[in-house]
Structures are given as structure tokens and as C-alpha cells.
Amino acid sequence: MTATVPGIAARLTDGPDAVALVECRRGTSRTTGRGELVRRCHHLARALREAGVRPGHKAVVMTRDAHDLTAVSYALGLVGAVPVLIEPRAEVGRCLRDVAPDVFVGEPLAHLGRRALGWGRPHVRIPLVTGPAPLLLGRRLATRVPAGDVPASRVREPDGDEPALIAFTSGSTGRPKGAEYRHTTLAGQLDALTALMAPRPDDVLLAGFLPVALLGPLLGVTTVAPAVNHLAPARTPPEELVGPILEHRASIVLASPAVLTLIARHCARHGVTLPSVRQVLSFGAPLRVRLADALREAVPDDAEILSVYGATECLPVSAIADHDLRASRTAPPAGHAGTCLGRPLPGIRARILDADATGLGEIAVTGPTVSPAYHARPDADAATKSDTGHGVLHRTGDLGRLDDEGRLWFLGRKAHLVTGTGFTLTTEDIEAAADTAPGIRRTALVGVGTAVCQLPVLCVEPLPSTPRAAALAAVRTVLKDHPDGHRVGALLIRTAFPTDPRHNSKIDRMRLAGWAAKRLRGRVR
Image (cartoon, rainbow, N blue to C red):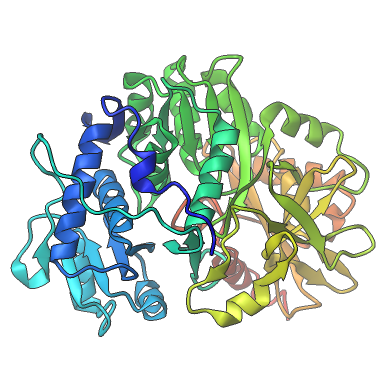
């Protein structure tokens, strides 16, 4: 049996008078202290037990309220139940069939979806509502209790191998899958983030992604949850992001490139700087140098800007500072086109599997941050997981190389290779170069036509101020200097790319390829 690891109760005992969580909504904020959060978690744990929740129960938690998500998930951990986090979108029914949850905890809108669409039927036996709602939706779970002493509920420090959480992937690169986290996995992630962030007692973390609010209090830092549009993060009003940074003097900003773009543009447009920020962590998609440059204009000169690589199944894996990212673009090692991801973090081992003669293969990782399995998906486990002397080895589905300095280079998703007649193109190789063209926001390489004889099509999303003809000319100029640029068979302008729902940063290439095929109908077999 694995030794016990510090659980939620142990991690929340320090600094009872410190602020744990700040929720921002439309210009207002609501603050919860660490001691208050602990009391609420124990209150909720007793309420969950009274409702019939037992150790080992799987409990879907679906709410956009940062406090409720955090408090309920922690309380479930105190009970010994397993929180399940799922994107509230079209694949929910399928995900719930995989999980077969005993409990469904959510805001009224989530329960309406559950009732109308049959989510979790017939498995959910305990429906609990986190806000005022008709009784037909489920029993109300009071997530906020008056100030005062609340007796501690029964708590058992967990065994490290016990399940702690199931977090579903976004489904942006395939069917969503539930990554199982054990308590050792969560402990490994917290240790890795601690090493990456080196949190200080007075740090304030702006969580640009809702589940990060779960980790912030466990890292011991005040966590600010801004009013991000969780169904479409890129449509968040930028003042809802910049305002909380300034008001609460956020020192760490953790967000996707789409959200960071909103912050950088707002600062540039209004001449705003962010003097309290000492670190920016970008995750969810590769950080482009142009965005790093824009962020650099808004933060102090000594602030650290990091591009963090990882996935739901293994987060974080590696990181690279913006200065090193620029250097890697201007002078990449021979044969290492694409985007540099930096060196793996302490305790993380990266390997390249099935490498070709150039060293290009699939990135695989082992370490304490790696999810050991998918829930109820033995097919996915067989395709991506294997046991090694260093723990479970996870195939990421990403293509890459390792250079002589031990740095990872990203070349795109394995599933997104474009295979033409007698050649193969990786998406990141072409896009990392094309994205440097002036007046371009981003590009996306897709293959149109039958596999092995696809037409490589580069879709171009220009900045709003860039005329279409100028955008195409700028990209063509860059492609002339690229060794494989001549293989791109068509350029298409699209004003806005379809993206993943979670971060609005990963491009939905399947939809984009379908759109390109319609535009090029008659040119491709």
C-alpha cells in the first residue's frame, strides 16, 4: 500500500486569516478567507453525508461558480468521494455513460440539462443543487454558511493510490476521456506547480481557467477567479480580466493564449501596465513570440513569462521562458524546426517514441504528474499507457524531438499530419514560421483530400486591421524562405478559426479542413 499523502484538510490548515479565494463578477468581488473556506468545506461534508454520499462515490460537479466548484470538490474529498469535472457541452451524456456517477452536484442550469437531456440516467441517485431551484431538480446543497464555528467533520488522510479526481479532456482532439488522478497525482501536480511558480506568502494568483481555482488555495496563494466567459473564453470582456489584476494586485497570471491576448490588447489599447505581475504562465497551446512581446510591454521588465506544456493527462510537463523562446526561433538547432517547449520539469522524464531518421516521433512522458489511467476506457489505456520502471508512460499524441540540450520541440499533433504525394508536413513546422508574417494573428495547416495524396492548405486568420491581399502576400513571402513552403498548395483567408471550447486556443482542424474542402471543391479529388 502506498503511504498517505497530505490531503485537502492538511493543505488548508495553514494561514486561517489569509484570503483563499476572490470571486469577481461584473465589477464586484466576493472574498472567502482560508478559515472560512475550511469551515464551509466541513459543513458541506456533513451535508453530503446526510444526503447519502459515501466514500468511493463518483460525483459530477458542474457549476460556473468558482467558490461552489472549489468548496464542493474539497468537501467531496473530505468525504472520500471522487469529484468528476466535465465540460458542460455536447459530449456530456457520453462522458456520464463512461463514468456512471452516483451523485450529480450542479447549478440549476446544469440540472435542467440533466433532466432534459437524460445526463447520467439511470446512474445518478443523488442530485444536489448548488443554488435556489425547484425541488424537482434535486435536494438543495447550501454551499455558503454563516460565519462562526463549524465543528470539523470526520477526515481520514487518503492513501496515495486512492482515486482523488476524474478530469475529462476537452475533446478538442477526439472523444473526451476521463483522466483519473490519484492522490499522488494531485500531490505531484501541486509539487510541480510549486517548483514552477515558487509561490510567496503575499502572492495573488489570477486563475484564467476555472479549474485552476481548485488548485490555488491548495498551493497556499490567494486565488482570484475573474468573470471569464467559461463557454467562450475569447469572448470575455477584457476589462473583466485586467480590472481584477489591478484591483487585487495579482502577481501571477495563469491563462490560455486566447485570454492572455485579451489582456495584452486591452493594455496596449488603453496604455495600461500591470506593475504587480511578476509571472505569467501561458498554457493550453503554444505561446507565440508576438503575444509574448505584447505581454512584455504590459508587465515589469523583470517579470517572468513562461509557456507551459502539458495536457489533462500530464500537467505540467515542461516550460520555457519568453527570452529563450525568442532565441530558439532565431537560432534553432539543426533539424529542430517547430516550437521549443523547454526542458522537462524536475521529476518528469520525456521520451520520443517511434522516431524517424530525423528524431521526429511521439512525445511520451513519465512522472508524478501523469494520470495513470482513463476511467472506463481500456481501449484508450491500451493505446496510450504502458508501465515502466519510472511509472506509467503516457503517449501524448504530440509529435516532437529532443535536442542535444535535453529540450523538447513540438511539431504538432500526430493526428494532424498532412500527407501529400511523396512528402509529409507537420503543422507546427509550417505554422510557427507563417505566424511570424506581419499582420497575421495565426495560421493553420490542414490536409484536404484523400490521405497520402492530400493537398496542403494553409488557412490564414489576419488581424482585423490587415487587408486580405496584404495578409496573403505576407504569408507567401514567409513561405518562400521555408524549406517546405513550396508544398503548400493553397492559401485561404478565414476571419476567425474554430477553436476548442475550453481554452479557445487550440484550433479545431477537423472543422477547418471541412470548410477548406468546400471552398476548394473541384480542385481536390
